[in-house]
Image (cartoon, rainbow, N blue to C red; front, side):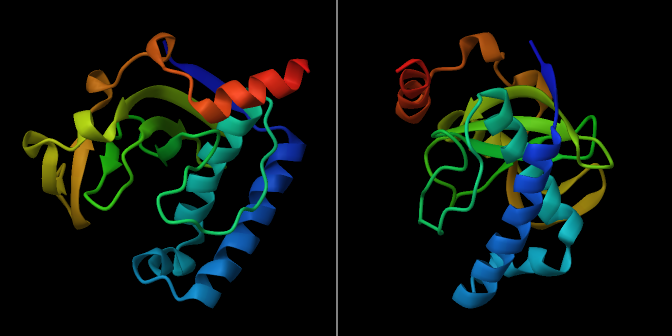
Length: 171
């Protein structure tokens, strides 16, 4: 069960501000591999688009939070995305043990189709480890989980953060 979220102007503005704030933080902290996206604003915007869409879908605020090692992206979940309609969920050994939600993003970064989800434990298996995918060399080895291997959202467990958010909404 995939579904699509079109960002509202409020969440687009929040995403754009997140790009500015996060890149300022990356520069200030001098975060090694993360800094590679400083020159690739499209990749940076893509990632924050998926996060903003997940926040919007759940009616949650989306704003800057300082970097926290092993922290979540939104409501206890890690979000990943691509512009490739047949793209894969990429995970890495350094990633936190978490639930990873995967979405495809349109070219103008305002519509996200959420495809499915997995856990790091299920995604980071030896048969998924790649240095190349579809004849393209990856910038670093990654675990590449195909869309058919992702679980449906009707099986997605609620994180503590999502349950707290839902509780706060009705209180």
